[in-house]
Amino acid sequence: MDNPLPMAISNADSAPYWDGAKRRQLLIRRCKDCNTLHFMPRYICPTCWSDSLEWVEASGAGSVYSYTIIRRAPLPAFVSLVPYVVALIELEEGVRMLTNIVGDNALSVRIGDEVRVTFEERGDETVVPQFQLAVR
Image 1 (cartoon, one colour):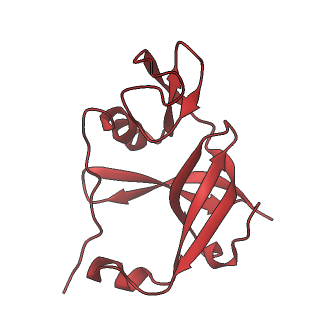
Image 2: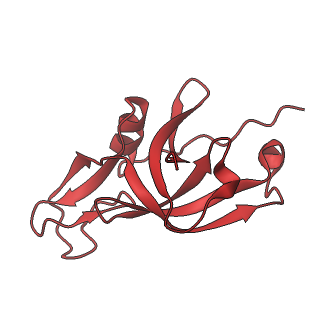
């Protein structure tokens, strides 16, 4: 039985993020009033509560702040992927985002490792930003 991975659920707050991913851009939000960068996409600044926000392209570089290795699939769609890495990445811009680390050496991950964004295609419509360990 084929169990495809879940597709992204786009809404008014996150649509530009997912559209950027389709263009192979990692987008984050910047508040025009207090200049704070943030992630997850939301319609107000988590620092000053302004709704004057814009999307900016992140460098795609960062480091592993924390991680865990998933060894038991939470859903049938993930059985073929275990073990896999879920990580909290701190981007160069200071924003943290929860994602996966993918690639042949993903299971050798350590806190502080440098990472770079990569983009995983899921079907015809969804592209998901993921991260790979930088060359050691």
